[in-house]
Every structure is written in structure tokens, then in C-alpha cells.
Image 1 (spheres, rainbow, N blue to C red):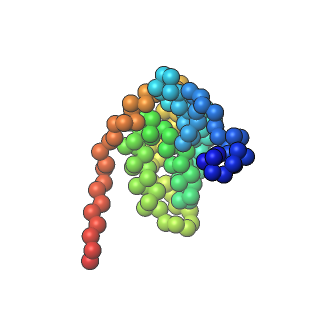
Image 2 (cartoon, helix red, strand yellow; image 1 turned 60 degrees about the vertical axis):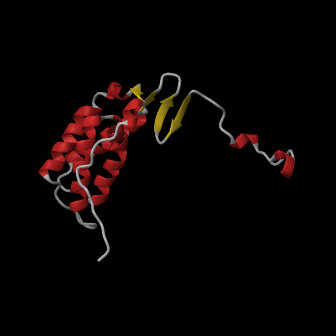
Image 3 (cartoon, helix red, strand yellow; image 1 turned 90 degrees about the horizontal axis):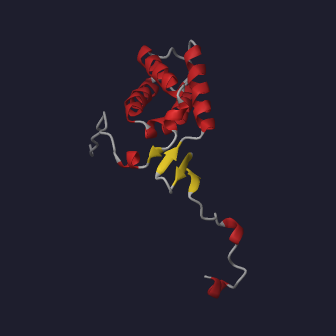
Amino acid sequence: MATVLGPSSINELKFTPWATVNKALGLMWNTDYGCVSIPSKNIQKATNRVTRLLSSSTTMKTSILKVLGSLRHVASCSWPARAFFQQLQASANTLPRFGQRRLPTAARDDLRWFRAVLHHPERFNSIPVALFADSSDPVVHVFMGKR
């Protein structure tokens, strides 16, 4: 490319230098040890959102979706969390788009479980990358066809 466009065509500042510890997809990846960690600020943010949602008597769909966005790292790094995450997502899908509603009891129980797990942030350090290769079976199958 430098031969065709000239020596000033490549901007070296736009390239990331090689490192064994990198941040990608909101996670810290360590290629030397083959492990991944969730940054502590993400865990704290998720804990705050879950606590705030549990303390409120009513909620909006956007609040639950924000919590789900914060919990996506936990669900990807923990097998048991995936089932709770799926059920919480199903509860969020049943809420109307506008207006405030009471959070279902099952969703509150799932949030309490996540809060208990998030109180142990050390569990989300140095998770083997092999855990990401395993995939869980879906709870719901959607079959679509032409009418």
C-alpha cells in the first residue's frame, strides 16, 4: 500500500501496538494466560443498576434493558447466569414500550440472584477463554416461515 500511495499514506498513530493484555468487547483479554476478566467499573455499574431497579416499586422497559446491557458480560462469563439472563430478558419483552409497570416477582428474584453474584467481583477475574467456546442450549426456539 505504501508503494502505491506513497510513504506518507500510512498513519502509524491509528494502529494499536501489539500487547498481550487488550480490552475488546468491554472485557480484558490476556493472551498470555488465555483468560478474560470483567473490568471492576463494569461490575460496579451493573451492581448499582440492579440495586436501583430492585429498590424501585415500578419500572420502565428502558430501565430493565439498561440492566440487561450491564449484565451481558456476567452472562457471557458464567454458565448459571445465562439462564437467569434469558428469563430476565423474557420478562423485559413482556413489558409495554411506554409507561411504568410493576416488575414481575420472577424478574425480581433473578435480579436478587445477580446482585448476590455481583457482590463477589473476584469471581470474574481470569476466566478461561475456553468457557466462551462452550455454548448453552437455547430455552426458546423460533421457527419462521412464509405465510
